[in-house]
Structures are given as structure tokens and as C-alpha cells.
Length: 470
Ligand code: 5AD
Ligand code: SF4
Image (cartoon, rainbow, N blue to C red; front, top):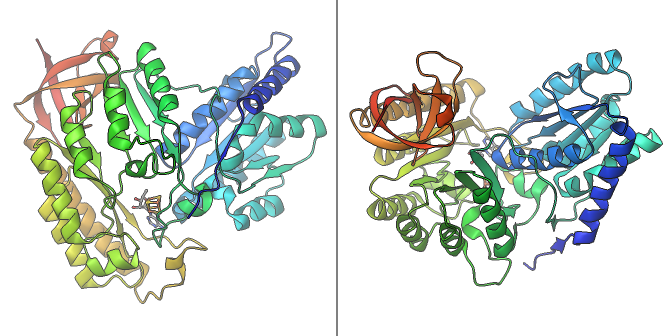
């Protein structure tokens, strides 16, 4: 399928930044600092999009607040992957009625994956008159223009065009100075039958390797120590570019940037994870030994109906290959329980696969019907209660295995990156191992952003605890 891909001209982004300057004069020109609140739901990709929204807002002169009663502009960046997230968004947007009454003139914007679905944009238009601006992921690059229309014309603006593009040069405002998200591609081509993402985020579009590497270089120069390359399916990076650089090559190029930092990435699709990738991970000293490899189910029958393009045997073989290259590899996964018509036997196959792989951490979800996806029309005789029982069983197993794997770290000394404070007295700092496991420590907060060696003294299901050594 040829890719309808548009690259936003640099002049068009420049024009957006000029609108930011214009808004700045209007809202912040007299020395007063207006405030904005950006509320983010969902995945890391959404976090990365919110950094762009905050980047634009910063250029408009806005400071940031977490208090909706203080905010002149509120942006709610939404997720559509499960119904639960959508319900939370709608509940929270509805509650903004109070703040808007208390603060006339407040502008409320709702963006992200949820509003890219027609029925949701319609619902916001009809039932949420407090919402002034709605824009989908494809319109993010022209957020300043859209916001300006609301400000100047005092009318509601709805922008949910489907045209997919890649935009470079949008200003970013990152939270923190240790870890950074770096989007390397957008969209997904896989059409797993349960998933809404390809419908709301469009087809796979890779950023050019030179743009990605330049951004990574700038992050390292700015002192970031932990860079996570983001995409819905990073293993197919570059396929749409025809430039001869695949994902493994990209890792190698970033690894060559001088400096002491870690390269992480997510998410990998088992269909496209190659031996070349595992070999590259093992050979590149800056690449973390962690892979998030969502298996979704351990049953071949379910995997087929999910349109995942691999079976249990291929998945297990990949894990074996990966562990051959990196015996210390941390492996995490996503699993959906209660896919339409998932039988007891199918579920048992998932449990046995988890026992076999022994994932370091598992993110488990109960299947959520998404309008417009093929799975939404598949017959399903099982009740929510039955699914909940399976979900609880799987969670118990996940917790047991995580706890056991964490115990294996006790007594070992590991290099960790200190990334923040916990707010607790006894273990006041948090850090991550190379494989991404959480370690609580005691130490001075000047260590944030530094690599230290830690002896692991205790553990539980969720975290490790350690003492700094050397
Ligand atoms: N229902 C439940 N979980 C889902 N996921 C994606 N779509 C759905 C859905 N309709 C899960 C998958 C994916 C993760 C990000 O969310 O496990 O890997
Ligand atoms: Fe959704 Fe599948 Fe694409 Fe992941 S790979 S975003 S689960 S369609």
C-alpha cells in the first residue's frame, strides 16, 4: 500500500510560531504571566505530544499549573485505547463546568486520539458546550492557529482532519532533565483487530534518521541521560522512507553519539523483531537491556483472530534468541484478557506462556470493545465477571513472577541512574537499572541525573531497595 505522507513545510511551522508570538503579545505582553494546564491520558506517545503542546504554549508566554481554577487555558490530551480512559476523560471534562463558571474566559481544548473518532468529536460538540477547541493528532502542528481562532473569533473550533503528516521543528517543553521521550515515528500499520490506534493515528510515518539523530545529540548535549525512542511499532522504523536505515541501524547511529547515556525504546511488535535488533542491542553499550514485547495472548487461536501475524512458537523462539544475545535482558509485555470468545483453554495457554517466559513485568488489560474495529463485531459469549476472574488470576501470576525475579537481584551490585525523589524519608531517591527496574535508595538529591552503583538489599513485587556503594 503506497503511503500518503505529507511533510509539513518548515515555513508552515515557522508561521505557527509567529502566531505564538502574536498570542504572546496579547496575553503576556503587559508582563503578566497567564497560566495553562495540560492534562495527559494514555501512552508515552501522548506524553510526547503534550510536550509539543507545552512547547507552543511556552512560546505564547504561558506558565504552567496543575490547578484548573488557576488556568487560563486547559488542554486535555486524550486516549482512546480502552473505554475506561475515555470515561475518565469525559467525567473530568464535564467537571470543568465549575472552573469555567468560576473563571469566565477560560479556554478548554480537548485533543488526542479520543477526539479523532467521529462519534466522540460529535459527542463533545453536542453535549459539552464548555469545550472551545477540539483537535486530533494530525492537527497538533497547527495548535497555535486553532487556539488563535478561538481567541479572536470567540467561536468553537473543531479540527479533526485525517491528513497524515510528519512535522519537524515544533518547539518542545520537556518535563525533567534526566529522561526524555524521542518520537521516531508515528502511526501504525498493523490493524490488530482489537485496536483503535491505526484508525486514530494513521499509517506508519518515520522521521528521517538525520532528524532523529540530531535531536538525540541535542538531548545528550543538554544533559539528558535516558532517551526513550518512541513509536507504536519501532521495529518497522524506516520501512516507509526507503533510505536504507532500519531500526537497528538507527540505534547504532545514536549509540555512536559521545556521552554517558542510555538508549531505550518502545514498543516492539514481535512480528518485526529481528535477530539483527537483538545483536545490535547486545553490541551497543548504551542500549538498555530491556525490551517491551507485547505478546497479547498465549493462544494461537486468539493470536490469529487478533491478526498478530505470529504464533506462540515464534514468540518463544524470539525470546530465546534475545536471551542468547543478552542473558540479563529484562522482558516486559502487554496481555489482553477476555478477547471475544477467548475460552478457558485459550486463557490457560496464556498462563502457561507467562510461566514459560517469566516476564519481569506484565501490563494486563481486560478487552475493551472499540467502535469501528473488527473485534467489536465478533461474537462473545463470556461475561464481564468471567473475564474479571481470569484477569485476577493473571495479575496474581504476574505479581508472583515479578516478586520472584526481583528477589534474584538481592545481594547484587548494579549500576543505576538516579532519576528523582520519592517524597519519602527512608528511601528518598528513585532510580532505574539498565533493564528499567525501579530501585529506591537513600542519598543526596544532588545525585539526580547521575549513574551510581547500588547494592540491592531488599525487594518486593514492584521495586528493589538498595544502598549506594563505592
Ligand atoms: N482492549 C484492551 N486492551 C487493549 N490494548 C489495545 N487495545 C485494547 C483494547 N481494545 C492494549 C494492548 C496494547 C496496549 C497498549 O493496550 O495490550 O499493547
Ligand atoms: Fe494497536 Fe497492534 Fe498497532 Fe499496537 S501494533 S498500536 S496493538 S494495531
